[in-house]
Length: 188
Image (tube, rainbow, N blue to C red):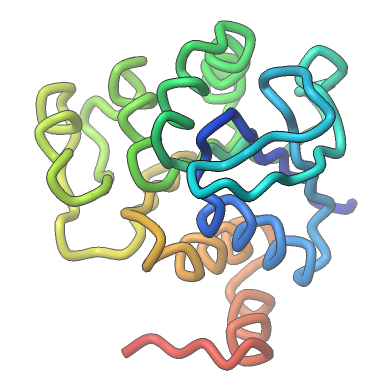
């Protein structure tokens, strides 16, 4: 059965984090959709890059996706968190054992929802108190942290590692290693 992912775009998203994930998941054969939380046909990121969406949030069947992914960026992260329908569906996915993932400032959304209590997680440097206040164990030196069904990462510089971890989670380590090799990505 084909694996599926939904990446959520809100005005002010971090372009590298969002598009790196979409690109690499699609290269790995994961059916990945770009979802507009504003219900617009296109969304503009924090650095003025506009991306056409595959589907609007109000037309998304969340039950069809194996993982829900939140890129960071400002004010993109705040706009994602302000989207009640998205937050409700993240909680539902988590409660039903599905994967959720966030990078940069977006792991703070999961923390404020109470989903990181007692879990290892990472976030953009300087925002660690946000996770600590909500009971997460910080992985300050890790590019990516996976704890149960939650994957978190630190920022633009860790976007490839984040995407590779998502591929490993959904398709296995062999597929992730093959993808890493095909894009000349090495862990140092």
